[in-house]
Image 1 (cartoon, rainbow over the protein chains, first blue to last red):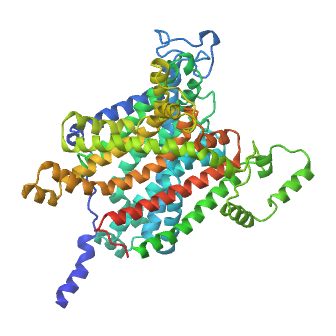
Image 2 (image 1 turned 90 degrees about the horizontal axis):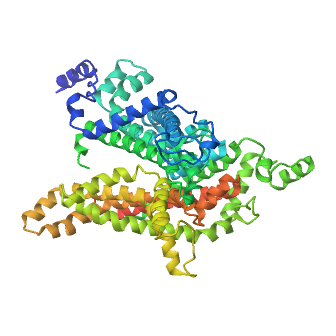
Length: 301
Length: 314
């Protein structure tokens, strides 16, 4: 008995110090079976291209008004018509993609980096740090998400940068909680103990050994949060709390179009509205399908 | 169970404290002098000094917080900067309209999502299944200001069935009240309808795959009894949690829906106050919303513990 126990302890670090190789996320075979992934990814790729190439595609400056061209129905010249200031609705919708995508990526980046750091600290250190971080997470989760974003932007002042910060802060608790839970599960595994035994520093263990193993749920959450962030940005700019005019943003353009609705100018809100719908839908589709690919147990839900 | 409730209530105290500190600090984060923020430009320095003293703004921040939260606990949330009306009163007069809209949207969402969710889970690969799988994705992707505008465009400007906005109190004219309620109710309910439908479907599919369902079928129980008596009962447990979380979505959705449909509720008051930099009103509404959201979450958690006999709480 004593002999085998001793053999086990000496053998363990050598045998187990190699962390299991994270499973390959995507292969053509799994992706091909997920039409939702293809549809979502294709549209998002198309949208990113449009946003980048906006100055090449849109002939008119989306910020300059042409009073003579005001309120025109959709036609060959203006596929989705013009607004009251004679600006091309489709052109502004294409430029609006820049703001939406930028906010989506940067806000989620802020939430992801801060949240993962907090969650990692809470889960790995435990004790007081854990208690404190947990309470802060609870407090952030005590607000309905959009309401928190509205409060932060209205306090910091309405502009594009503050919108990104506000939406980023709202996303923090989701990532912090997710990371903490995953770290608690992973940290007692033998390969982590092994890494510690051979003298890896705490940061090294956290980032080189724990992080790669909790990546999957983070990826799924990130693609779903981008959908939320874009929707939140649209809501904030609809309320006048986002990027200020004349910057084209989908939410603000819809709010502007609302004043002309009763005059029968229906096309003004259609461009930005469809843009939000398709973009958020694609990110949701993508997030859902990535979750199915990474976790086949959840398929069918 | 009593011990669990007590512990949860005690745990709520530090969180509520942190929430109130955050809301208090948000106003301090606002660039500019609080006096200018609260009372507008005031050229006379003695008037500024007086106001500063009168509102305790010359005191240390922790004492200012203590005074503020003390007054809040006594129901005093200050006065609106624009109308000089007490904030508590302003909120209370608008609360009935918001509650009416919120409750209507919640009922509408449940009435639609439960049957479709059940049909979609039990009749796989049917039309109902298609609705049950595609609507949830679409419903959470459409912002309610856009669905609201499309509803107005379709049902009040093109077909002239419902009015595009406004509010008639129920006591004045019940028929008109309901006619004005329909469109904002649908717009507000859409996202929560989508989520509820999705969870009803997945919860039921999950429950139908369990061992005890096989047992129920094996002993010769009819499919209807299997679904209703065994599967549905268990599918409702996670569903309750999700519906509870929808209250938050309804709260924030009310901000935008009420603005579009000119519904005179708390949400529109908040949006108008944000636009008019009426900070006491904004602060009051945000604090009350957060506290009610927290309470709902607590109730949902307790209900969950009560409904699911497998979960034991010390």
